[in-house]
Length: 203
Image (tube, rainbow, N blue to C red; front, top):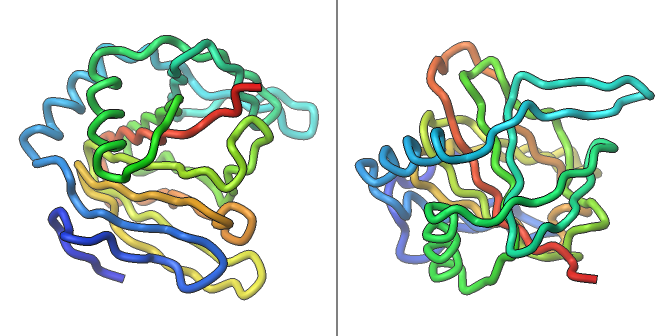
């Protein structure tokens, strides 16, 4: 499914049922995206992601970072992370996303994919730390990558290219009913940074 390559007057609905996924196009210009990419690459405290699967501790090739308003704990794949305070760049980008979507976010999980060989398997973001049915705003920089959704029951698949500066927002019952993934590809040699702004329960 091919979508427009620039910022859209109104976001496009990506999935047909059982959730709410809106694509806003490229809300940040290519020149600005390049600058943000360079800033994030150098100022973020990147660490290899880790998971405990079937009792085995695994370290991924992908790197991640976790930032928030407060030192929130966030647990996924049986690993708990503690948030770092916002950097200046992240604070600016959070404001841009909030102004564009009309939402508010108190945290951000960042992913660094060094090239197309690194991706993410089918999954849903349904961790107990997240606000139920809360919005997750995904902002991309660097290499363009294909992103896909699959309905858990009907197996319908929808995919789109997320280019530098583009914004995608998942909310409502999307996580209950849909999986999403970033499939690996041999066609992409460059790095991609993805910011997923979220709301952590403050309790």
